[in-house]
Image (spheres, rainbow over the protein chains, first blue to last red):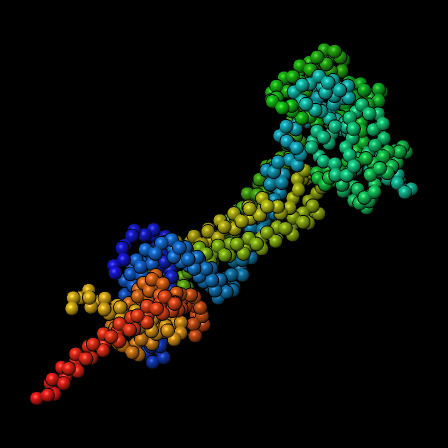
Length: 479
Length: 118
């Protein structure tokens, strides 16, 4: 029964060759060893074994034809088997050269670890969206004096803005203060903030326990307070019954109505918040002390908002020229407030630096690989002569180096994790914005995986290229 | 006998020998070679390697199945094992061979008897 010969996908052909290859190699090796036992020299033994076997290329071709017409399942089994063998072979090779493996592993681990750590910082500061609701619709609104880019806002102006603007669906003011907190006797100074009652709702910062502030109309709210999660933990020991109790702020009683969920406010300076009250004395246009947050309304654009606010500012300037002549409005996206100055440039520069370090690490490992490759020349040549496809050899080099890359990646992530954990300890506070959470999340892991793979491929590049180009006969002759 | 027929006959015989060898225990290709070689040199004159296409063909037909295991000197090798289907085929082939050789013997004995008789 003659088998029909189909045209075979070359990659599959290489896979099947792999299986047949192994068997042939095993057989000839056994025959060779038997010959040596009979007293032949190594050269003789090999020659006799090869002669006795027949033409390995012919056997491979025949075998390939037989197996190829079997259909896909045989191909898949063969593929998995080949991959498994490659992995095993790669591990064996690395174990046989533990010195190389260790040096390469450490080099790569450090390179990948550094990159992962810096990427985590870059990602959390520059790439990830802010931890608020719909952060791209959040803005900060400033008064703009004639000769300055921005200025704090006065309460009267803020109230006018809020009432008249339709482009912004909500506005909230923030006023950082220091209060005296008295609880169980001991008074202490605490950084706090007076905020508009809708402040947390505007940002989308959830309140984990209790409730948020009620709308402004409720005057009884004026003696309430909301704490940050971290303050609740550190100062009140995570007391679950705190909501509803009263604390003494600046000598007066305030009821704790809510505790924020963990988030960016744990890293900001204000530890507790209470509703803003504008007293008539402060409500003058010349008193600027508020920071204003605003949320753009649905269907409105920034340009629309800007022109609307410009008009409102112009009206205010007309109304009180003494205080507000030529004063305009400055609107900044919230993200720009988050990363200030040249922090983005500095971070990207740092990232480029560690990337360079990793490239050097790759080159080092590639060099080590080249040194090893020249030692393994004869082995490679023999296997080529026995019919191992170049694709197969290439794949084995690749697998071996990818193994190194992934192992380096795992170690690197561990290093990065440790570094990042103590990160906040050794960078000055305030360098990074409070919204940035630096750690190893899935985004960072994906990055580490990508870098590990790339590293493995690059390190394998040089010796793989060499093996590809090698002339087996030449190398065999050089005994 | 045409060359292709001779090849087929040889191939069929080789397959039968392999199956018979595997009847006792599962072996890898090299061990099968050794076992058969003790019995017949002629069959393997084309080269030891020619056994492998036969193995692949038989595995495809489902007469044997392969698995990877450690050989006696601790190397990973592909072992072959007789299947139930292969067992059945072997019984049939073995019977056919017995019939064939008996027939050939009978003819040869007759011839010899004639030669002896004056």
